[in-house]
Image 1 (tube, protein in one colour):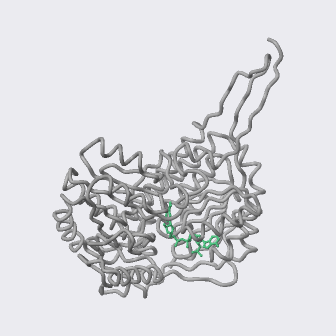
Image 2 (cartoon, protein in one colour):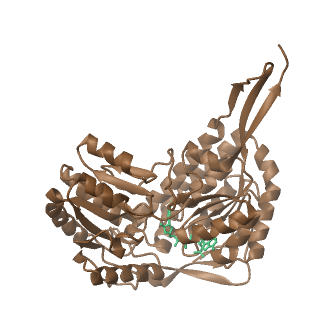
Image 3 (cartoon, helix red, strand yellow):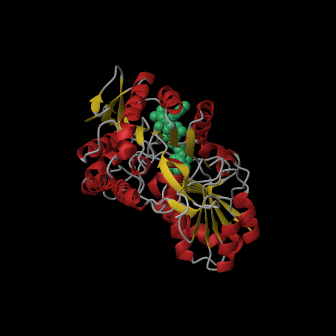
Length: 479
Ligand code: NDP
């Protein structure tokens, strides 16, 4: 069992109480033990991060780049080891977990480049004998609060971004899956990161959150919209800079002219990949009349054939649901959908496997309407509803009739339809003939309010959050 600890000022340490994580594939298997942090631990972590800030801001540029690159190399080299821990603790399949670890490594490689690539600007001034220099400085101590569903990728891209632009940080991973954050902390240390630049605290977000948000200069959060709102309120009182990546209820539109095989695969991957526990997962399948019956017939067969099982078994295509509350929530959504008259095409029930776990059959509902709870609130599980519509315009009306605006997709071979949809969608991310989930690290990612708030993550746009602008007017006199 992994013995995780807080990492504060370069020292690994515990605190009074501890909590244990269990594998959702086998609830009899304990995966890790971690200290239950207190507000004092959070305070101490921010304090040492603040002490480490001046030296890290001035740290040699090539040296900073090298540290981030070494972290990327270590994550790559240990992808199977970390992926195995991730799969055991969170429940996604080993293939998905190793892929996520490799993606975490790529974020470090990308931000290693950003250390040397990040530009400033030089302007001629409007005043004679002056010029203007615009530079980007670290925002300071950044708290990073992360969810359980991508327990290495999301911490990695937040930590790498914070460090690349000269900030120090405190990471608070989800208490459902903190093991990867411990591995990341060890790797950062072994890669030569000075003590106090990266700090780690474990425990209940409701206990640690207020201190982290109040004491830091900025907070980058990924999680539920409800928690995001609470963080925003605390941040407002302290004027802490905030970046929130929140929930989605992402539509995938399939038009009559879609490439049939592509559309089925896009829906299958986008909805059921990573056990459907992706903020960008396709939860509403909006299908036009001409293709509807053939599409749901093929998709139902594929969904019913998905192999649900233990995360570490080679044949498993869909791992268990990550947590007991999440399983409970999924079952409640299924029951309500049935009550509201949705027709079950596949799944809908818990599954028994040789080990006791949170197994749920991938679930597809057809004959659903836009107003059913299933199509209005984020389920965050391997569940989707199909809504039949007449044409592109009705599809757009249904797709955009939802306050969440993270990701949206369309399958069509008509470029005008694709472009019409791209322009009409209020979502921060639009996918054409590609699953609504699955993002690149070198371009901006995020949703619009209430799916996101306060600037994008990843790509050059992430510098807007991790830096503060300084505009300097230089009077050099006449030359
Ligand atoms: P939560 O909002 O419950 O938790 C996210 C993190 O916030 C956890 O570390 C949690 O700690 C912490 N937290 C809880 N309460 C507070 C608080 N009052 N102050 C500060 N921190 C707090 O989300 P989940 O972990 O359940 O993740 C699922 C949600 O995340 C889904 O709604 C999903 O859509 C969203 N998500 C969004 C993504 C995006 O990029 N837009 C990506 C991935 C997920 P604790 O350990 O106590 O749980």
